[in-house]
Length: 133
Figure 1 (cartoon, rainbow, N blue to C red):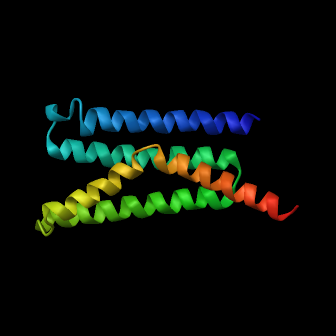
Figure 2: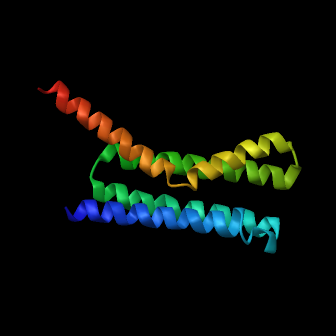
């Protein structure tokens, strides 16, 4: 029972971090800071969400989910970081492509991945229980 409480407290923490990202680096007060500060803020929030969510999934106790969480967030941070660095150094990418990268970042800095994994786990768990009957 304690593990479930920690899991849901972490969900609230992830949601709060996502709100901070959206409020201060995407909308709200974003116009008050430079684009570079916003980009650094986005990456910092994403880098904080990854281990926080991982802790929640570790407490939940389903190994494949916390591994999937960690691998997907590391991949997202790596992709966004590599593209950002390449754009900063070369200006290689167009606006449409960078908008897609921004959508990837927006997805991972939302509570949606955390909740989606919860739903996926519930569906898999239910199917396994039905198969064992």
